[in-house]
Amino acid sequence: MAEQRVSLITLGSQNLAASKRFYCEGFGWKPAFENGEIIFYQLNGLLLATFAEKALAEDMQRVASGRPGSFALAHNVRSKDEVETVMLELLSAGGGLLRVADEPPIGGLRGYVADPDGHAWEIAFNPGFVIDSAGNIIFGT
Amino acid sequence: MAEQRVSLITLGSQNLAASKRFYCEGFGWKPAFENGEIIFYQLNGLLLATFAEKALAEDMQRVASGRPGSFALAHNVRSKDEVETVMLELLSAGGGLLRVADEPPIGGLRGYVADPDGHAWEIAFNPGFVIDSAGNIIFGT
Image 1 (cartoon, rainbow over the protein chains, first blue to last red):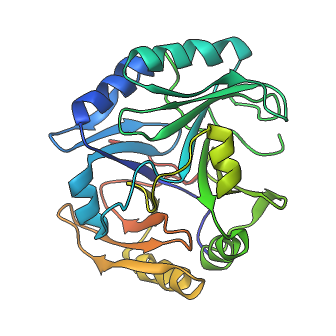
Image 2 (cartoon, rainbow over the protein chains, first blue to last red):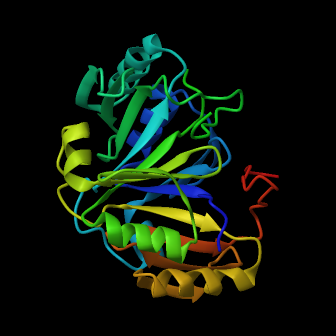
Image 3 (cartoon, helix red, strand yellow):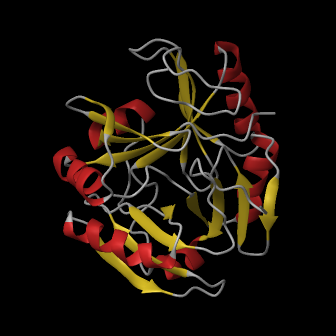
């Protein structure tokens, strides 16, 4: 039985510079490492990598058959006010609006922004998910 | 500036039962919550959700234009031997082989398996990334 863990999220990118602008200026994140084909960001116990799309396809030996894919990442925030602030910063750094922030059935507030390669980010304030001081979410706490 | 954090990874699924078999029997993970359209798994400080594809598309107000998408998740393990063990368990629980485990340029061992919806998982032993007792990876430690 494998531990319940994810170590990296790797997103294919057709334009690493545009992607970097989104993550560094939009989210305000700092790379932990970068070279000409990959950029790593340290997140809460795992890494996000943006990787040249062709290099990723070669590494996993499969070409993506379409974009965007059927998945989303979520960045939860600690207060309702932060949702639109973060979304506006992402949009001004090259993000594309998918869903204007509104209230989901479970309460709170969430919207969706696509990164320059079309990868979806949900920005959410979810009162049911407590974010601890390390930035982690533990279901049911 | 937003904290460097991801709170959820949501994967669209066309067959939640097949997906559940992969994650529960292949990885051996236990759901933290499930209903007829979504299953949550608690990972290291974030949640993995498998979500009915149509419901995800409705939530983010965008239909996936193709699958598989250009991204991969990685599950790193603590020893070289575990790579093939985990891969075999995933393959016997409905996963599809993308890349037989071999040594990447940076050393170690890695292979790729697709989940039943085609989402790619890299299973890797990377001697450059230390996994701490909580299952986290901190770049450069």
